[in-house]
Length: 192
Image (cartoon, rainbow, N blue to C red; front, top):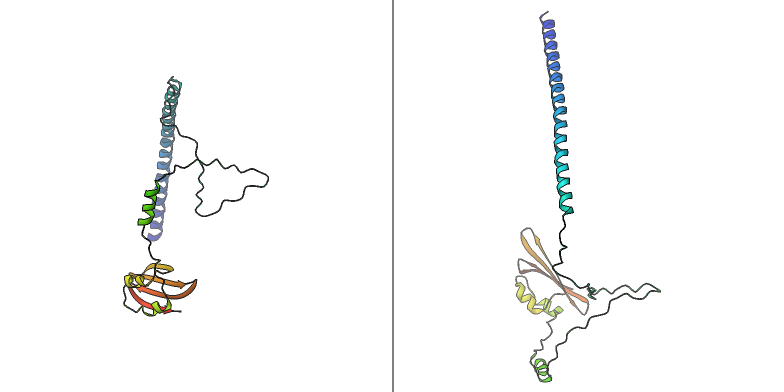
């Protein structure tokens, strides 16, 4: 009996709660709908005023503004980064613009000859050989290795907090060997 009474009381309270929530939702919906209409009317009025002001500003007679800077038409440059231009289409003339003359600096012959005479001729950089690679030992620093010859290719990366470099050496197109450096010191040498 007590159990049945508790069930009826619980059902009544739940029904009352539902009724209250639906009533509140209906009240808010009607208020929100009415205020929404007012907000829409306000926005429409503001936008109409903005439109009137812009139309008024557009109708005003002002003298045309002269450009501050006049530019000449652009010129196509022939710098393609080493990639050749495609051939012109068959049956059509090439539409490349005429080249503008470049200013040239002419020096008197005595001065030009003095420049040629004073220009030092640098020897070619040393090339690493198999014998030179055999002289590279673990622990040598980077500067000593580079004095023996510049690498043909170089890979630099960070691994586990250390700077790792791999120098590959070639002689007349053939691979001579590889030197691996860690933190600027030689770690391993491979001679082919």
